[in-house]
Image (cartoon, rainbow, N blue to C red; front, side, top):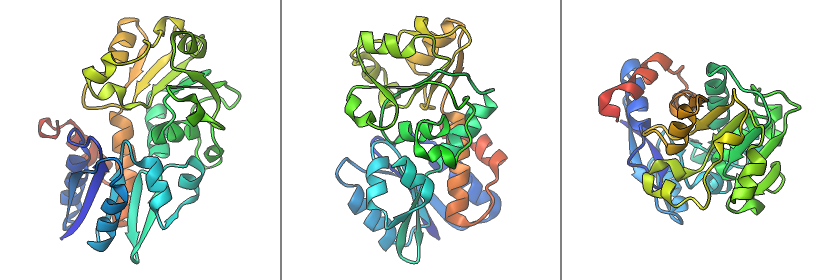
Length: 279
């Protein structure tokens, strides 16, 4: 039996194991996918274990995606351009990094009907870099086709704006910064871990002013295990909303193919996400 895993902190909420294990069963692959909680500072040890034990590979989630890029023996062109890795495959004893978040988000955005610019990304970590690749805010746009017009303004709001250097127009996470960034925007994507819990949402230094958005704006959160306050507020205002479920399934399907060499059973994986036991 082969092993695969998702590495993150926190990781207990992840539905990736249910999605991948359903795909293994559907295709008769003798493998099991498990969640592994990896504290900050321990990713290198975890990846060495993945390699030593001959895993099929591992997905990497918050907060490790940028560090994974540095720790892999090699990375593909897209992951190198984005500066973040969310999928690590073991090949001939080497850790090979890829980024399936980009294409996963692109497919989810297309399913939602796309959006017009200007586009605002909340956060400046590994997930933000993948989203910016799709909407044309990084060099990776050469490899990924997005649903946002190429001439649209890209804006980034971060608690540490210096992390957004070279990614687009950066704004501080303050009332004034958020107001300026969201003014007239047609798309907002929250890539931060804030929506993972009510406690994290309550600790925000300033609220997101949804009243500054265009009337037909799309508000996106990459969180999928609960409805973040941001999406609830956007829905109440009559705005379009999109959670992280579709992106998760699409990026998982791409990662599955990288790890197994088999075409992913997308319908099976999507159904597994919605199974009550997966929650």
